[in-house]
Image (cartoon, rainbow, N blue to C red):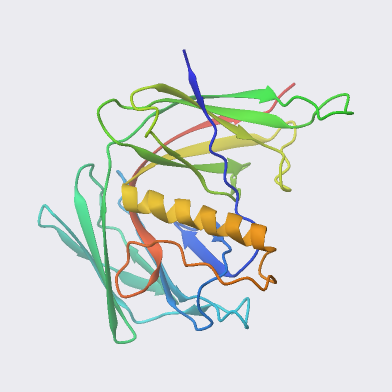
Length: 281
């Protein structure tokens, strides 16, 4: 029997932290627990991908939304527990690249960044790859008073490996464009099961229409990276309950990060599997 897991979390629009990975924008719009700009370091290593991009900015001052200072002249290196080390070259303001990393599963990566006289580091271990089996679509049930619903439920099928603790993030693209939202999964209650992850579409303005091509990337991530996305989702939900950025309630904590020295952002070594489906009648 297929177990149905439905852990849908979608960021609400309040606050001002923008994060970019590998040229595709993930938008985390959370109310930061600080009025002063804080360094934000976004870095990732993908399995079997030799190209790695790192972006370094400063989070905006809460009172100056939309201002994102890019940090140049940083020194960056990544070392793994097999004795390999690579450096990064700045290819544009605040953007750094290395073409010398091929991620391997069960290898621990340590990244070290020196920027504006401060040092930061983070560690991430690349998990074993979970294979995305297939995708399917079904129509949503109409709301009361409606003759039919125009919404869809995207179902993501995969086998959760037994005897290991696994964490996933799903990235959803419509016609090649990344949609917002952090959709995450952990196997705390479903270890070793065949999973049917149900994702409602046509909500919160992400309109899905006939003829659209949907692509899903299943990212297998480690526990600290999962905690980062989980707390980012919780902060967004908390902000909504308080009435958003204009609320007079106390400011929430920042997302839990694996960076040292109070930096924001996340460093992730992950594997990825993907599949696509088109919406037809």
